[in-house]
Image (cartoon, rainbow, N blue to C red; front, top):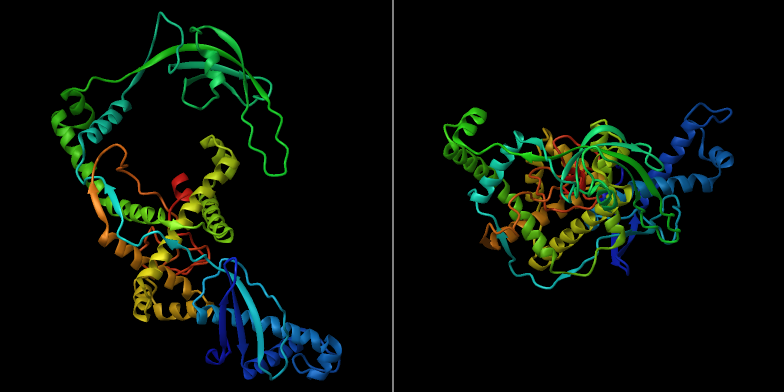
Length: 492
């Protein structure tokens, strides 16, 4: 990549207020001379100068036609862009903002060049305690409640709706209705659709309008449309009412088949209910065994984040927010779905989606910063051997070339952050005080789904990374996701 002699590059860093690091960079005179010469050559090849073949115009001619200051300005920009990856590597720095230049400077041919550059970085917060965390985990065996729940799901596959006679619609009932939308509800138009009162798919006012009706009754129901909260400085929208003409076709209840040995045999091929329960128990147990390591990892990092003193900076949150959003949009595009279609299918607004994404980004940021604090407290380091191991495990055939490219691009500091966080999580997992409990307040399912961090080997789901923290993949790709799989995959 670079013709610069990296060993001659000098840097010194100072941490300023508001999570800004200022780096003073000195480029050796020989490297400046090479950069200026390269710029003159590029200009000579790019433009036509009367009397000279392309690429052969002397500097004096170029200076007279283009301007010496313009040439040096272009050389400065080229040199700074070439130097910045080396600067990040020398200072082992992962920025969360674009570079900022407090005092612009310009190169002078064959002289040392000094300039200052500033980057926004992650805040260095502290923990109230670095002691091992205490968590609860579900047991690896299926509980009776879990087996019962699965069987009820299976019964639901064969449930049927039967008419209820002799009474009117009550709260929580299921009905088949015909709807024709009027003012502000033109898109509502169907002949016979199942609707459950209290499901939340329609406003409570709509449900209240159905209560007391009987099959065959018709009614015009008016209800207020939801209004999004105005953004700062904006006026609130005027509330609107929607009008819908509704006819009740049927009042129904869902009837499930009786749970008998015959049900188990005819529908699922088991000899009896006991055999069915045994098979379900085994399957649930296998699923829990596979899920528990991930659940444990999520919970130890979540507990550690509760000890974090301070809040993530806005620039850091912005990098994670933007990356989560971009990853989610990429997933929708891969499925051939638009964002508006997805919102409609999930009955949420763009504002609600954005708020959820912001909450997820905040969780990721807090866990990331908590891990960073633990890394500093425990002194976890990333050695050259650790880096080699990461790249070897990446699946890249020429891992040494990939590692070299990461170094030249200034992306290796992000890999080091990932390795150190991995070590912090390993320590949390090894030292955690674990209580096994299947109480309802302990979810036995997910770990939070997370966005993948660009890393060479094991995808440690709780290893947070900034949008700019990268690491090698089996195929090098542009920045991938943060390690925590939140909105993008969970929503998907």
